[in-house]
Length: 87
Image 1 (tube, rainbow, N blue to C red):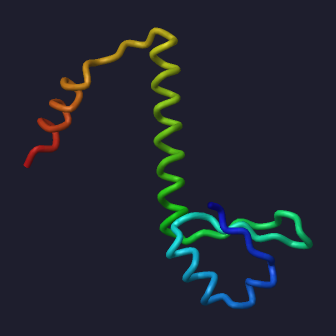
Image 2 (cartoon, rainbow, N blue to C red; image 1 turned 90 degrees about the vertical axis):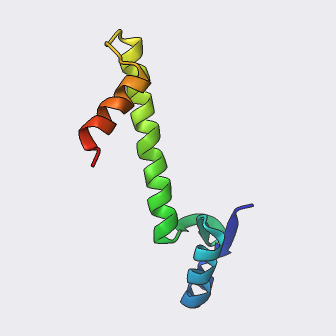
Image 3 (cartoon, rainbow, N blue to C red; image 1 turned 135 degrees about the vertical axis):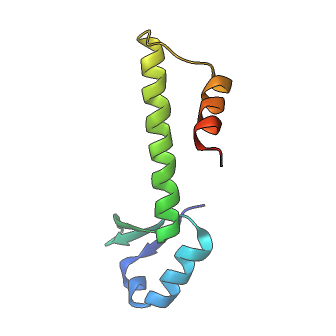
């Protein structure tokens, strides 16, 4: 369930910081009863941005397949990477 807090709660920065880290999800801040800000820990931000980037890459790959671009077998691609980067 999303955490929604009034902007006055930002006075207690340590509590908000601990809450961001423990929940591992955004905290929504309201001002005069309306949504105003979203706070999250750096770890949550990095995780969410990595997920967004992955979705972008999947979307682009699906677009390329739909456009008829040549694809290669996944096993062959992984073998090429292993051969290239094997120690």
